[in-house]
Image 1 (tube, one colour):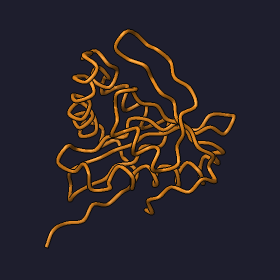
Image 2 (tube, rainbow, N blue to C red):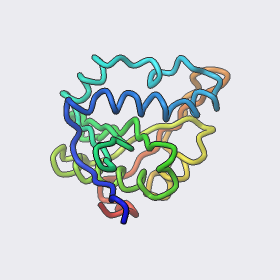
Image 3 (cartoon, helix red, strand yellow):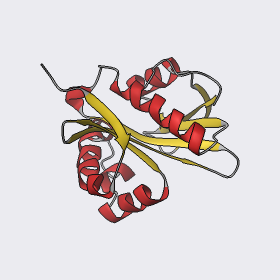
Image 4 (cartoon, rainbow, N blue to C red):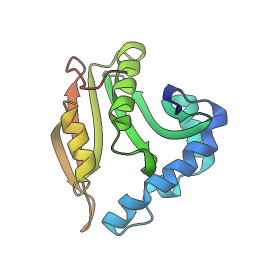
Length: 166
């Protein structure tokens, strides 16, 4: 009988595992866009620790291993900014990303009193775009960063239900 994945708030002790997982997960994005200098691959441990202290960070664990994570903050206008949704490559395509997305929405919607959720991804990141659309997000803006990358911002009202239940 296998272990089940549990989702909980990240702790300071999770910082190194999250950073290593982030580095692993963003390799495919860097390859897709031909840019290995993207922020998730250059973020320092100190910067990640500051995010842990200043926002909401959730992790999914399989036993003691962090296999997925997501971060979010809510601004003064009530917009929850969700970012760095990562799932270990061996755990992808099993609904874990959707579960984490629903969990961070629920957390920011209650504790952060979010009125709206926003996130972004690159224009070529079809799996990400599909996941976000499936969970009620719609494109609201796009911004050309350079010749290789256009960032697509997607949003939804906090009253729009996510397809996944936590």
